[in-house]
Picture 1 (cartoon, rainbow, N blue to C red):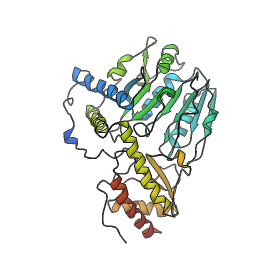
Picture 2: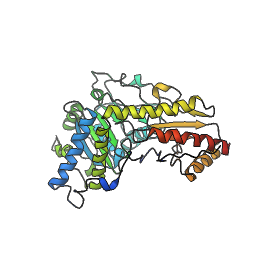
Picture 3: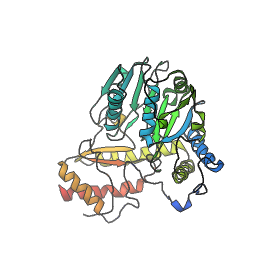
Picture 4: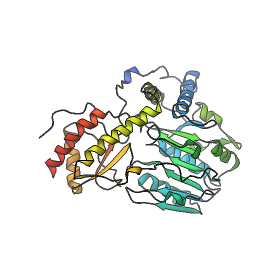
Length: 370
């Protein structure tokens, strides 16, 4: 039968992701709007972004956090163009974004000594192939495949190369072994449901040392420059952004971090996301026509959860449209390069109630189109 109870929030998009529960744009601190980001009020807000991020994530001493242009993609490109080239590179890809970094390294940077390790959607490559003498580039969570790294055990503590990690759909949702990660990038519009256009760049002391001792042989666009006269541009990591940021987006991100603190901090945010994944797992266990794209539960994402259905691709599209038309689930289709199916965001900004009330609708829609 057609359900009657609908989710209070039907936004299950994997980016931009759902706003936090109780979000109200009118309650943001808008005192920075209309002011220069270089004025004391703007610098203070941007410096607070860096400091609060480090505090909430529990970053090790000496790690630096900066706000950079162009979302997670900009942060990753900045890291790769600034840091790669002095050592051989191992690059791991198991979904569209990771494969994109493979392409940039081999076709744009055109590095000579590159070792590529890939896997199909739903699987992980052999991470033990990482050579501790090489730099390593990888995603932590494959946003378009629903596959995450279960841990960082494959990263050598005594490595000589740098680890460069795209963690945009993992930070604030998964335990990260920070001491093993030299560069981490993410964006506000993922796990915290913030706004787009800005990226976050986290650097370890080892990454800073590389920046100050190695100069890439290629021209460096202004928005990628992290050093001047052989020294780190430290202001980037104290709120002095390379280009003009949206102070409205900054206020939105600060609000999201305040919310994380209000629910009990990082641990509670991770716990909430894992509980959402458990709700989805219970449904799959008792429903024969839906399957996790990641069959191995140890590598199953708890944010961008991907499914295949026992339906042809055209029927999957009908199901997705039907649910959107009913106002119970928006933007849940799989990524364009991924196998036909569903992708349900289960990060901490999604309430368990909304998932629980959505799933009977999913079952109804399947029966309607099958």
